Image (cartoon, rainbow, N blue to C red; front, side):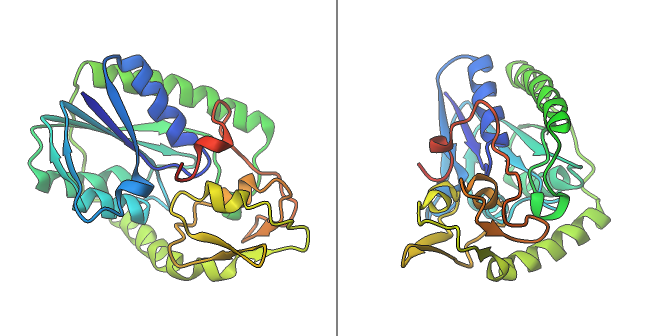
Amino acid sequence: MTKIYYFSGTGNSLWSAKRIARISGGPFELHNIGIEAEKKEIIIDAQKVILVYPSYAYGLPLIVRRFAKKAVFNTPYLAAFVTYGSSPGGTQAELYRILKKKKIKSLYLGKIPAPENYIPFFGPQSEKKVLKRTAMQEEATEKAALCVIETRTNKINPFRPLSFFISFLFSLGVKIFFKQYKVSGKCNGCSVCEKVCPVGAIKMTGNRPVFSGKCENCAACIDICPLRAIQFGRAKFGAKGYCRSGIEIKELGRG
């Protein structure tokens, strides 16, 4: 049995997780880290374990970090893949430092380029860029699946001080970023933002979304809001959003 754990805001990591599962063959289970990380105990028994998650400011999303630290991996083989837009930075180095303490016999940490979806900083991407990065993701995901099939292993340089510093600053910012989200008068209370949030950080109150400190700043709510009624950073009201082709909105969030 192969168990695959993913964290995904707008579908990049979910798409790669599903694709790796299909190519690898054999029985598998797909688990959402957004849900699993909340368990008091995380004990994972599997022949193979695969993690797929995005890079946030050159580091692990906070919830992925908590999940990796808490989890007990009873497996002889673990492969972890980071999806990224601009650069993965030291994301894999950070995870490598955590996993080396788990005494897993065989490890492989890989990278999968994908469309940039953090529009609060990078702004909406052109269709040409999205198509190019989508093709890159598909090719890299095929190679990732092959690495899993062949149970490849590698080593990562754990010393990435600049990435660590940037990720640390972002981690501090995440604790207050949720207070900066704004909702325009166009909001009709459809609750799509609440449904797609992978960590349950949005609750509808008085037919309006209210953001909480659980927010990971994935920006899925901004990207997928049908009326583009949510604003944060460079993601202005009405800005073009992003959702990974091949992933349905109902697959996002916490199911």
